[in-house]
Length: 169
Image (cartoon, rainbow, N blue to C red; front, side, top):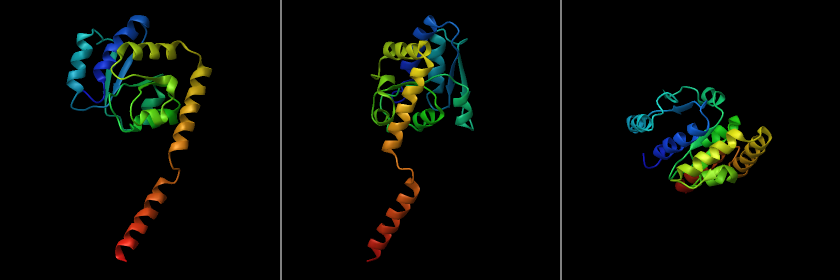
């Protein structure tokens, strides 16, 4: 619970649903915190707005079915879902922590532990223009491209070969 910030998201979701009554929220994945998150959702009175999918075999399909994503982590190396969301063109809000700062557009980041900021930023995206979302998605993709290697597997293989050859000398 501490790392992923699901408690922050549930608090933000409550504020967001108060502003956007037609909102449907989907929690994707499963893990040791799922039961606790379900209890938080019930305590917030969001059972009719919040649905859990469990693990999904194809994240691309899940991303194609949503309008926004929230990544409210308190600390995080670089979550794969952030890269997948950018690649799929899904806008959203993430905490301004660790590796997320390297790829997620600054306009879409909030301080961790800030449910009000998270809710307000998600609301701005919901209420904002498609052109602005697309501009920021492209910005995030450019950041991701600038900071990642397109041929990472071959670079790793080359480095491993060099390490083995040096070890044999």
